[in-house]
Amino acid sequence: PMTENEVLEKARYIFTAGKLIHDQIYQAGARYFNGTDGSEEIVELSLPQKNMIMIVRRQGKVTMTDLANQLGVSPPSASAMVDRLVEKKILTREHSTEDRRKVVVRISGEAMSMMDGIENNMLGFFIELVEKVGSETTEQWCQVLKQVASVMESKADKMGIR
Image (cartoon, rainbow, N blue to C red; front, top):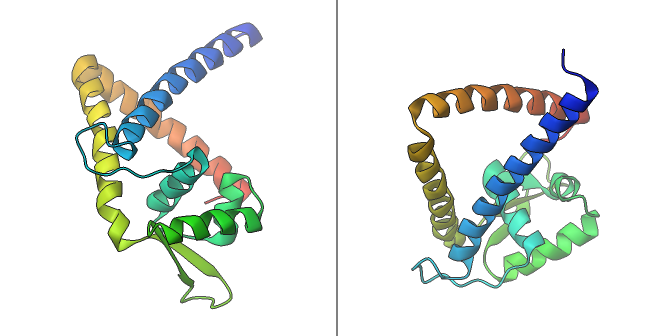
């Protein structure tokens, strides 16, 4: 077993490497949002708005309550953010077909191509990374990430987050 100091050292290293990856992903998305990657899309969005869009994109549809919980903001704050993104025709809001009292948020049809462009930019970063680290390291990385995802999903399930 690892000592407490070894655990801290490894956790710090993983955190730092994860932050480097996060920053690269964010920059790839920002280049698309700002139109500096050759795309014509230029959208003025705040970081919280971008986070909201990515959550909705990842889940396909999300209730206002779940969205507020995942963003760590109050439901009225989430609702105001959604209102601004609905005005920009990036998100849509509709009543849930399962429970008419709940409001569901989705990416609008108009914004789907923008989201595909952002995702492609981000994916390009990972393609380059996979090519540079090679197949053996990539396979090991995938195995580690499967274990990490399993632990995180289990934790999310216990906390009621999805």
